[in-house]
Amino acid sequence: MEFNESKFDAQKLRVNLEGNQKGPILDKQKARVMAETEDTEREFAEQYKRYSEDPGVFIGQHPDLPMQEIVVLEALHKNKVPPEYILRLAEIGAEVGGELHDFKKKIRGYTSVSLREMADVLERRLETSQEGENVLESDSGTLYDRTPIGANYGLRHTRDILKYRLIEKEIERRDEQD
Image: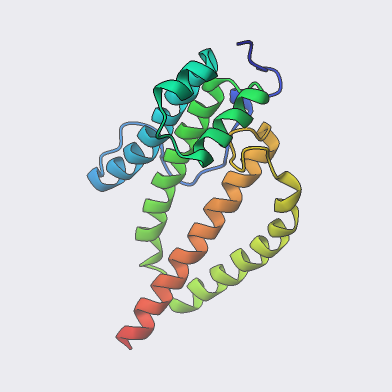
């Protein structure tokens, strides 16, 4: 199958991250989180690559594959998404996981007032970005078949949601201690 490499340029995928999220990761827990995220996505990219070679044969070899997964594979195949694009998304997803791990540790040192201010800023940013989120729907319902602009947007949006939740949990933890 010929892939649409110009539309799905993996080199254009990027999210500005805080801290060092590229090798070597010395924090074992952080490394595990990053590896688990990336491994899952890599497995899916391999599965998609095999599917792209011959969808009918692949489906025949995997009769227990959930329908939702088949729909995603079909949408990616229809849009000619290169497997390398999915692999790059996997790398970025792992880096975001590493950033969130660092963020969770870092916010423990912030004052409650600072945490609430950060939560307010993130909440406003999320409300604004939520308006544009629906416009970026994809055939597969995933980031995999969004062009780089849409995928980058989706990654940042998801990261901000997770940061907001981490801040909320830290505030709750402190309130319970008081």
